[in-house]
Length: 146
Image (cartoon, rainbow, N blue to C red):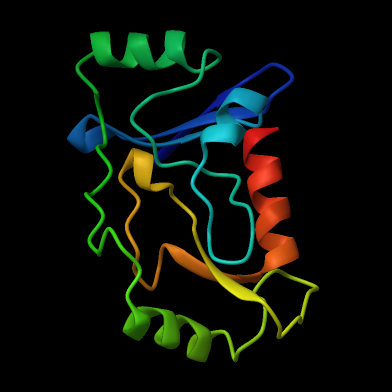
């Protein structure tokens, strides 16, 4: 794997696998990219596996595509469209019946939050969901839409 650093104020990078002519991963710290990034359980991720680059990466990705490279497509997420009681219990068991937001250990008013929203293909499963208290859940949505 080769990393192509893109200069500028956003510390952008493109990860490619030259032998397969594959654009494997995109990384940019701009607001557009950060807003749409996927999140890991309990923390914000700074890397996004996404098929649509931000405006800072678009010209570089376009040049790579002209050279025969292809963007890696994210795998389709597996899971349910509705949260089941069984999955809710498994998630709360995994969380130790506490909020999974770092620094918060609230045990009351626990809710399940999907990291990747349903409108963009997010499903209810063990890897896409996190248990949050009502306050942390509200804050997470506030930061998503800010």
